[in-house]
Length: 143
Image 1 (cartoon, rainbow, N blue to C red):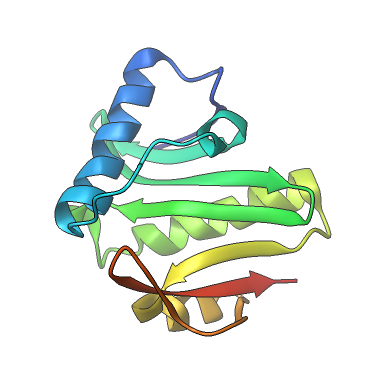
Image 2: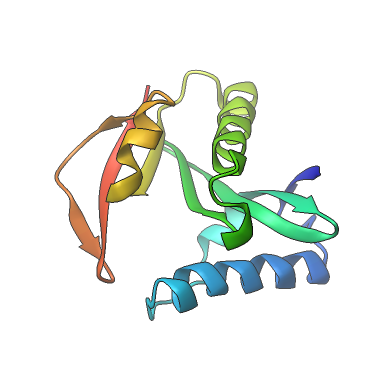
């Protein structure tokens, strides 16, 4: 397994294509959400992913904003779910954030069924659950 963290400008066209393919597969096809998957946040984000045998196995983007750092588009490919890959991904993202932006609040719009997972990583719920394209989410923060 190989971990990679790059800015948008550092990504090759093939890396970007592979990231978008996995994001579309998970967020649009699997979750049946018809929304704009590619957005302006991709341009300012750090893109963190893991590969196994040349294929992306997990991915998230880390977005620095004036009020804190946001983790988004967290995914683990279907065949790696339940293997601990998601925990490794988020832990690595948190470590990168601490190195680069120590002391900043870290936010995530978590799918509601994963809120207990994120609580084990130090996140707390803020606000009420809400529907995002038919998928229930809860905003969470780690101070």
